[in-house]
Amino acid sequence: MKYAATRRALATDCLIVARHRAKAHAEALGAGPQMAALLAGTEAKAGNAASLHLSGRPARLLVVGGDAAATTAAKFRKDMAAAASALANFKGAHATLCLDDFAVARQDAYRNARVALAAISTATYRFGRYRSKNKPLKLKEVAVQSAEDAAAVRAVRHGQALDAGLALAKDLGNQPPNVCDPAYVAEAAGALAGARVRVSVIDEEQMAELGMGAFLAVTAGTSRPAKLVIVDYRGGAEGAAPIVLIGKGITFDTGGINLKSASGMQDMKFDMCGAASVLGAAKAAIDAELPVNLIAMAAAAENMPGEAATRPSDIVRTLSGKTVEIMNTDAEGRLVLCDALTYARRFKPRAVVDVATLTGAQVVALGAHASALYANNEGLARALARAGETAHDRSWRMPLWEEYQSALDSPFADMKNIGGRPAGSITAACFLARFAKGLKWAHLDVAGTAFTRKGSTGRPTSALFEYLLADAAKA
Ligand code: BES
Ligand code: MN
Ligand code: ZN
Image (spheres, rainbow, N blue to C red):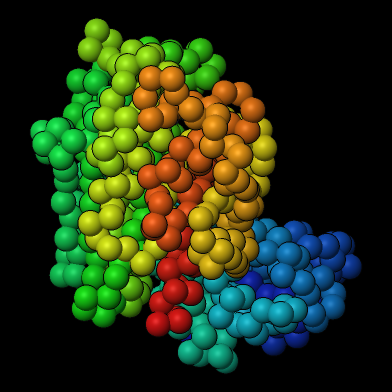
């Protein structure tokens, strides 16, 4: 969607107003009595939208919110979601949101606008390229009208960038696995290249030279070559240490020789959503020209069974030098990530955050509402949790206690790649933690949040972008 900021109400097809101001707006347009009738016939409840059709321009007044002038952040979010889904079915091309109508507790004009734009991005996203009958959106542009000019302009710049980042993340997630393979992920990342952005790809030959035995073990059973994709954006001060984001990019996870059941495999095209979200966050940061140095890495591979596939009990040497007994080939995400984590050290990062649809156990623990957050650093954990709250793309901190580590003990190698049924998301994080020693590191297990049966949610792209924005504001 295209967003704009405007000071005064310009010619628009649909004006979005708050209920407590609806009469005043309608009277100014000569439709006071009709509005009075509409208000009398509809309930003032958060999440309800009502609309009044007019003969001129605007052709419609979209009314949301309660009767009181002040509202809460949660209610406002519901109101904006209601307005956005009404807009998505709207026949007109242009809409304007009267931002000044809304007074939200503990939220400024900038945040109000961001919340509204986020709702519109969610409601207007489409993935229709494989449908023969495809109804395109009529809506082309949404303007935010506010007397607080600077706040609206900034919110539109950031909201527009995030809209594009989210669309990239969702598109990559929604693409079928016969199209979106590791080479496709590399190509999509390549499109981000530009003046301050270098994109490079480590292929299997280079992985072998480097000694990425864990990464290569995952891709052994497929004919589609693995790629470790690196997007290097230098928007910050020259020489300043970068933030590194690493995403799990398993373009299809069959489980390998530890083959998944049919029902367990259905959603596994989404097993690259971690990679999609870090590329989405990078796109948003680049579009917003954030003053940060950022490296986004996508660890892309397909996990297939086959004659050459890795066997349960195979032992491999990781890039770190540590050996891993692969007791379950379906615990493949941590294998590509451990080598990517080790590789990230060469960037001398200020912080490393990996994102992965890593475990079914995370879904059991937190469901679809919160990603699992792990960190070996309090400040980083707090910053990510706060960013998630702000973006309403939440995560919940989980423990990385030493006591969990022994679940990974192996009689034959430095560690196993599985820790058994109990605390599966935690022991997966514990595996990664062994490769993050000395780094300021966090891990988001997004197995339950990154997608639904209806498609990719783009999560945690919004939280990551908010984290980068907050970081850039500190600098
Ligand atoms: N990609 C899956 C995890 C997953 C499950 C993501 C459901 C999204 C929805 C991962 O590679 C996997 O298979 N994990 C195993 C680990 C186990 C073998 C230790 C799991 O969670 O069962
Ligand atoms: Mn798996
Ligand atoms: Zn997986």
